[in-house]
Length: 343
Image (cartoon, rainbow, N blue to C red; front, side, top):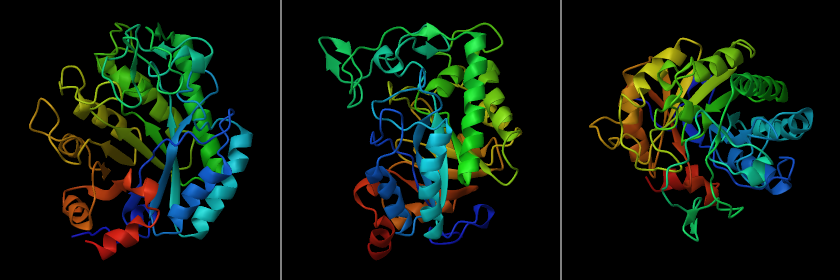
């Protein structure tokens, strides 16, 4: 049985720990990471993390901006900045991916300076959170304090542009030296929106049940990066605007989604759960179990994993090969030492 400290040869990792992508909002207006953010990632690589997944990076500087001072990755200036960071991470013995994302309707026009794009003109769910406080009776963006409005339905021309943006960003990522690319298909952002009928009411070829949008993104990227570059896909049931959304296979067929993109060249599925391997609301199945039933590819488990015993128990499950740690790594760059000394 594999343990957290074992190597993972398919990705050439020194152990099976993963730093989950977590947005830190520490970039310039143009999406360049601050020196503090660069050092933040380098410090984790100095402390025995096997794989670091850099936080969600916007694929353009217009409609995919989801946060003030959020990361962007879509031009040569971004590439040059990250190449130096990647080199140091590699020197410390860690591998590193970048997560690419588009927020879809989970942004506001004050950030995009124009239209907010979504599969359909359907407003966000109304759940409140730190990221979505209520002000004067309206749910607002936590940074801009402006309300979420009904988004514009994205046109086929705009869809093609977004797909090309993902393709370009992926190519730049490999050129910069990243070992892989993770596509953010989770948490209610644009790709997740396209896959879920509560967000996507289209009746054209991009209807939710077709999964065509995500398939075209995956195929475009896989055809454009080297065969040995890892392609990860992150998925979840929960959304930023609805953490407790009930599972419905009719509205979001996770197994069909996984099967359809598995054969297009996804190498690993990153399962983001509120608690790893817990049952989804409305079913007696976990996200991990649904993914297991649809693919033979490796799985990254993520969600409230706080000790080595829990990690190793998850690693005993079929196809669960890697363990992602999230918030624990924000304040504890030496998390691996803490886990080993306090099993």
